[in-house]
Image 1 (cartoon, rainbow, N blue to C red):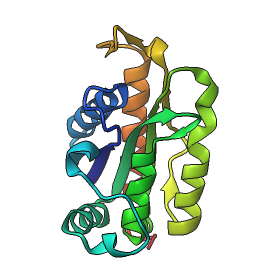
Image 2 (spheres, rainbow, N blue to C red):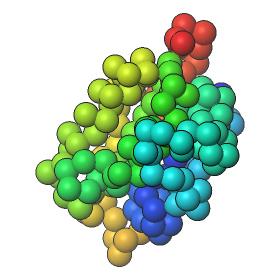
Image 3 (cartoon, rainbow, N blue to C red):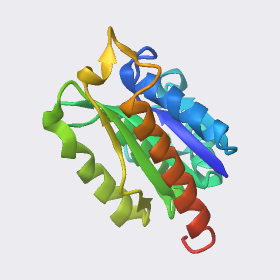
Image 4 (cartoon, rainbow, N blue to C red):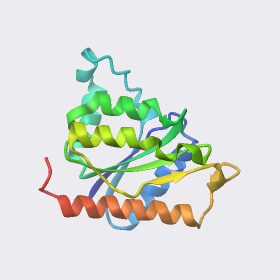
Length: 178
């Protein structure tokens, strides 16, 4: 199974980046081929709806998305919404998302933004016919001790469940979407 994991925070030491690393390890431990892509170092342009779509970095990342059978987005929640870098990624790569199985890992300061991922999920479902896994991970400051994720615990179990679900959905739907 070929899975693509995006670390959408532009801060490489963020909590969502830590969760992306856990998701990568879980995917690989389950025997899946997985790649982690951090958005920060890509320096993707801001989508202007015009000339950015043919830039080499945009074309390369769109091809990675097309080649993946499932995608996991690990992203921070800012101001009751997923971060702008995650939204920009989708705006830049558009149709590459068509028919993908997508899972979400969100890191937020508190529990009040739990449903913040839903408009983003709706967009992927309606615009690109993505299949969104019904399980997503929402982590808060309380899931971390001194900004570090505990080695064992409930949050790691939930990430493992999400990575399993994305792979299982992608396997089950292989050839049925598009």
